[in-house]
Amino acid sequence: MEFNLADMLENVVDTVPDRPALYAEGRHLSFREFDARANQLAHHFQSVGIGLGDHVGCHMMNGTEYLETMYALFKIRAVPVNVNFRYVEEELRYLYDDADLVGVVYDTEFADRVSAVLPKVDHVKHLIAVGPTEGYELPEGTVLYEEALAAQKDDRSDFPERSADDLFIIYTGGTTGMPKGVMWRQEDLFFAGMGGGYPAGEPLTKPEEAGPRALANSPMVSFPAPPLMHGAAELGSFINLLGGGKVCLIRKYSGDGALRIIEEQKCNTITIVGDAMAMPLIEALDHGSYELSSLFAVASAGALLSQSVRDKLVERIPNLFINDSFGSTETGYNGSAKPGTNAKDGLKFSVNPRTSVFDDDLKLVVPGSGVVGRVAQKGHIPLGYYGDPEKTAKTFVVIDGVRWVMPGDMAMVEEDGTMHFLGRGSICINSGGEKIYPEEVEGAIKSHPEIDDAVVAGIPDERWGQKVAAVLQVREGGTAPTQAELEQHLSTLIARYKLPRFITVVPVMQRSPSGKPDYGWATKVLTEAEAAAAV
Image (cartoon, rainbow, N blue to C red; front, side, top):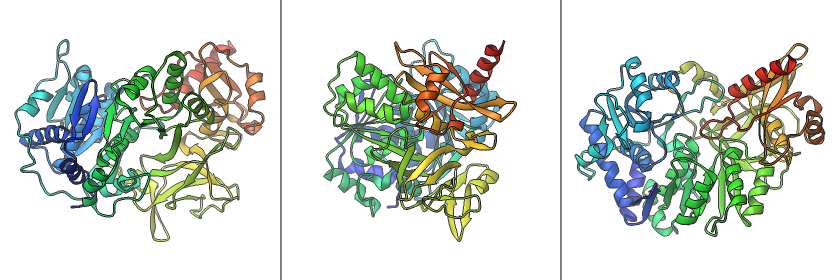
């Protein structure tokens, strides 16, 4: 056996077959049932000629079918590709084409979008629809998901021998450009993104240890709340399944809906993506009553979790442990937020030994020097970007014989080795030659008691080239601070040149489905608001 996800998960299934594995929308599946359904789907894929190395899009919202599809494809050495269900026709055409999809498993509510895209991509040969069909016109040739399963055997016969080299592709969110498919060997992602099967302790040393360790573990009930099209949710799901635990899913996220699942399913952990998913939890806690004694940990990854929001969560759920992770689709896990930091400290993380920061000359940044550099990770890292050798060459570099990945995150290194994260370089604001990182400013703004959410972007300025501007969402029942009041609040938290010179307030912040800031939208809103204010 190799460090292959299907091999290891089958080992867990055979060891703890009757344990609960999945819950979603009222459906409960044991490990045995989960495996059987994935076997049926895998045989169906084989029956239509899908196999080794083929890419199949997962164009679905959360449900057991999403994880069944991924598991089934891994079984036959094919590759699941996450599809953003918020994408409109042209964005979908780009992704379907860029990923070379030969098949798509889609929710019926997206049938019209799939139908619109298919004439523009000639390599999609097979379609499977999940969900009710009434009221939807499905593309020609579509097979219904449950019918596909029912026609196939549920054993593991006729599956190929697998490899640690089998691919796991995660398409990036496209926050700062068109999304790209990050190609991971399954073994590399298992260690870099899943903690070697046990993030809280020692990683597996042999793949065949997966089942025995799952048997020895007290089964956890985890709740990866983001859409499964987000890498954090996919990885969180497989971490717990490989540990013999139960995974709970929510189709459409809301604060009340999430807390109800925690209460009803006795969840021990919940995974979120930053403030955008934490704030609805806080609002629901302020307006309702929930029995949450089972919950002891919140894990956040992929977006800013500001200190003020962390404090609010702990105030409402005493003794809650919060792990705010730093990482990216290209690196996996880099480190966790340093305990005891506050808004003035900025975003500081204790990082793993494989993470370093390099300056513009590709030299290691000296701790305490104040030099801003690029965050890099070595060891278990991806192969590159699918179909894009040019971007791969820019992001994956060899320094003194060691291969590193540098996705563009910028940071300084404190004297004690702590990494002071500043943000993604591609969204950096250049104001009169000063580099300003939006995420640093956003974290400071969110410490204001009247502000629930903030996205910072640079807008044109005749004198400075760009100036800092902020879109604000005020807390329910709150009053937006004036420009002067916000500047006063921020004066002790960030340098004066980083202060927003223009602000506008929106009733609801637009973010990606995974909770990441939409900087393109923010720039447009701010530019239009400033133009209107000047009239």
